[in-house]
Picture (tube, rainbow, N blue to C red):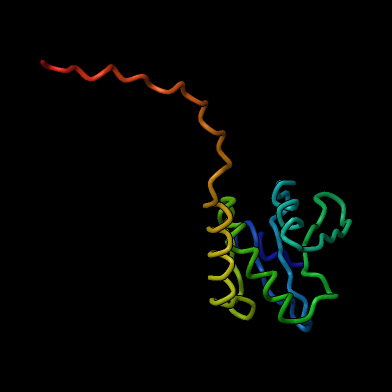
Amino acid sequence: MANLADEYGTDVEIYIKALTTTIHADTPTGAPAGLHGLLEQLGFERHEYPTGEPLYIWHTVPDHLGAEEQKRLANRAVPALLLAGYTVNCDPEVFDEALYQQAVHRLRAHTARPAPQQPAPARSPSVSAPARRTP
């Protein structure tokens, strides 16, 4: 089994597996659990093949999604993976600039929301000195 992430030295390789319509996300051998967890949070399904050590792990988009939704899921994952600090290569057959830009915009809007702030403690009203009158 070829692992494109190992072959190209990236953290994630997103592509359509040859002779199928399945979108794969390969991670390098020994990839951190956090990377696998992030791919699963982003909607990818984890697969394992016990070939001894190391274990071969890859992810795919869910089969029950339609072709457009599969492509959308893959393109939405790219900016989130990049933001998390991973190197990602997305095959041109999968990559869609408009979907990617929508995902970037959505991610920026989500991260740009200000955190709820505590209201400032109430201050006692300031007492101004009485105005001086000159006779």
